Image 1 (tube, helix red, strand yellow):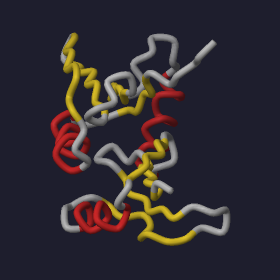
Image 2 (cartoon, rainbow, N blue to C red):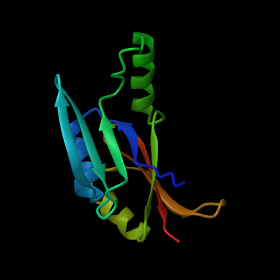
Image 3 (cartoon, rainbow, N blue to C red):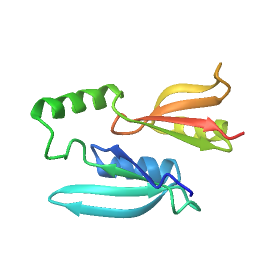
Length: 136
């Protein structure tokens, strides 16, 4: 039996800014862009990996959430503590330089971590924590 990660979900607050970040800065493909009642769900993924995607979703759209929960999610997103994705690059330093030259918010410059990886970190336009590891 084989199990793969097919899709992960990250919230977005500005669909156009999110598309620019994931498509134009990270080089992902936009695979789906679905609108419904003024909201958009945008599926992006790395070229050459059609079975792996990130779905950028409107935040807190679950009808079962209370207003307090919606406020908490908005507060956590604003602080950058709500969602995280970890990516991998075969050229971490080159990718960092490219992203740093834009308006992407740097959280951490490339560094060797004590747990054995070299990585850096950014926030996407919605405040999601985007950590990028150097491929071994």
